[in-house]
Length: 237
Image (cartoon, rainbow, N blue to C red; front, side, top):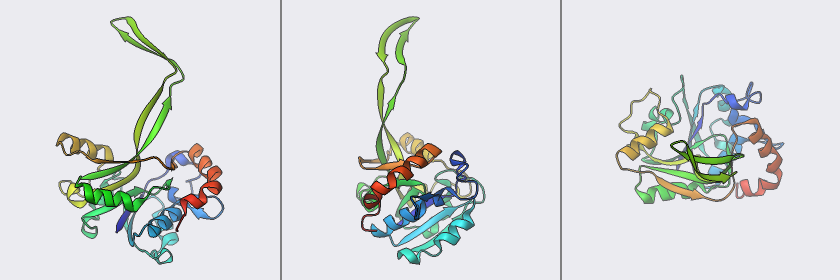
């Protein structure tokens, strides 16, 4: 089982923590970097190979992770010379990937079963499998519905439920065959292209623990919760 970790971003939203460290290496708790937790989880789930897409401060990631032997994995790297979007880096490494593989961001904390995501992707025959999570957005205002200058409905401070992408995907190499290596390709562009061709992605709905560490508030929350969540996040690792 092969995983690709996307770790080439600059982590602008997480500054100043990412001024000297790439985002996947910011520490969680007293002992672990985010990327280390992810790699330990992948190894425990049965993944034996991993390719890490690096860019900003990528040599620090390479020095920290090495060849992956400390986690019982074989790890190689793909360097992103210029920003290629979420899916663009995959186009430069397709020749070293199996037909079905896992793709994930390198800055998330979750107890998601990565192996089951890949298993369901293999079984579904879908071009792309997206791990999804329920989010509730609270609107702190009274919401009006208007029609031709008249108020026709009113809701006081409603909550809206969404399912959002967790940044974890099952992907087929053939899905990317029509795109050009070296050009940017975003996750949004890929999904919209699949919808246009009536070849929709498969949804892997998840209800466990998930935190996207993209902003200082998220990072502070991750550190505050890690001690109580450690046995959940690193079970079997």
